[in-house]
Length: 247
Image 1: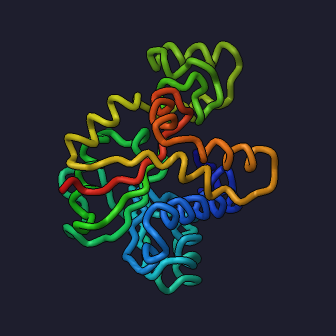
Image 2 (image 1 turned 180 degrees about the vertical axis):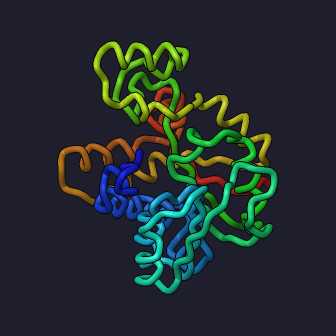
């Protein structure tokens, strides 16, 4: 995921800007424009690119990551409402107060942490009673592993998958560091963490504003009945949920 020599995202800041815009539009569609007035937290913020892009739309945003990035200082100097700091979120008690955030962003993080259930329990802990979490990540049952773009390797024992990739000449073995799960496992974790999931894939599709063929197709599919989208969740390429605390 990272260029270790330069400490920058492989996909560049433009991709981060696009992801931030998609996150913002999805939450605005689900929760209304008042979501901008809240206090936001980007969990596993990495280089801070998504948090920095969101800073232009929200009142206040914080980002937390296990290690500091060189780009943080520049991002914070450009956005007075942005704070980035070091911390581990999938532990017993991360350095974030209870019920302190209106919105949590957890984008492509769960598959990289050692304890995903602890991650979700901490999201529940730091959310205010009426807060929401944008949660996105890959689906184990999708046949293409999205970090290396190889088929089926994430279904194999990891040591065997790495050996196979090396034998076939892959230069991306080190990128096979994600452990995705099925929708059934993920929903069991949501239940244990006290979180209520709303499938936001149709919302994400409906807010696609491009004019390309894929954008038009996304908006058409987004208009399908939600019951259809719910049936397709177990075999979708990725998950997108808006989570709230169970009452």
